[in-house]
Length: 98
Image 1 (cartoon, rainbow, N blue to C red):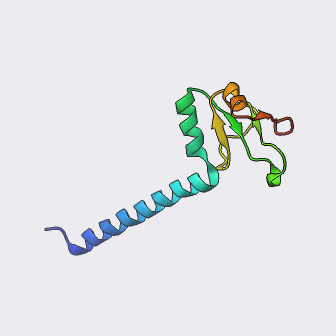
Image 2 (spheres, rainbow, N blue to C red):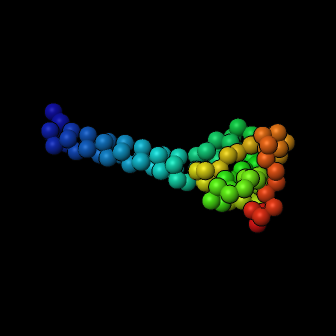
């Protein structure tokens, strides 16, 4: 027979692990955006084009080509190709390229 304290301890660790895991996923979805970036890499088969919102909501957002931005960012919108970004009404970002 398994001791009662061992069962409670295992249940506690399972609960803590679940809460931490959900917390990490939620923080990524709302703050970091690496899951979203990874999803688009898998969907497109390569690094996607990103559209970041304009600074302080002023002006038009522009797209940035792969290799000119850091992955992640929960507020970015991804497109598989430059043509997709143009078709959605975005122009190339002249200031955001590194």
